[in-house]
Length: 356
Image 1 (cartoon, rainbow, N blue to C red):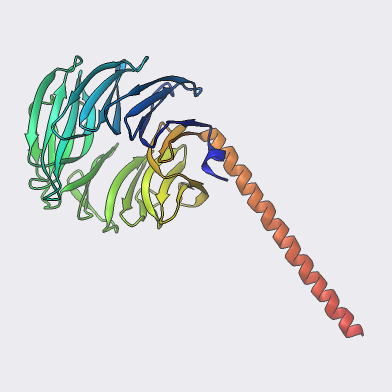
Image 2 (cartoon, one colour):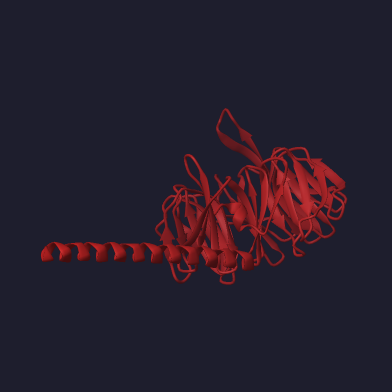
């Protein structure tokens, strides 16, 4: 079985996919490496496609529009037609994005090749018409963004590190974490804010949480589970029951009903792995390299380097898994029957030899 055989729907984005988004009404939006954006309805019919200046790395629904980070630009499209409402260049690449009240907050960063480092960053606030309301310039790059009610929290790199919080996008409050390492990733659960530092330290509400993933690369909330993944491909599931699995480098992850879906990329091929709650791998399928996932529990959208936009549906996936597991059991029964028959034949041959 390959990924297409597992899918409820497969659509062609026309170019490698950088980012995907599943909307509440199950419309699917995909942004490509060359800036093309396409939208399909819940049944898979193409509603519109629209050009943007560069590779799309974030898709943010915003009322009757959708905001995008596209290379150096923030672009806002009409959600119904794909028509461009406005596009604004930033100083550096457009990175993280969220809606704050009735405004759009976007971070940007400038990378210097000579120094092999980010020299400066900024937080931009735009209104509905694309007017620049405020820009906050920073010496640190925000590497992660989390929402807490009406507050936006940014996880900073060096030199300051720590968290930067704002409720209006104009005034910011810095919260040191007591650790030298920059913030690598953040995630919110019902238990509060979890912060992963670049040295592998995991903080929960400012308290250190013990873990054993020193090469930590990312932090994910999948359903009710908190998941860490490392640069070498290890995945550590921290919620009960806790488990860890090795593998090739993780490129994306998502949840589909009770399944954890992991996309991995090895030296010569890529694959998708479906794990049960206890960590048991229920299925592995070949795929093009997956760069983005987004879902709501019943559907999960995947965007691949091969240009496929793949929608998995929980009910269909469970049926496919049941069929695959039944086939494995049938094959095991056939092997067991064949081995038993071989043993019986060997026994009869020995008995004939004794009689002779």
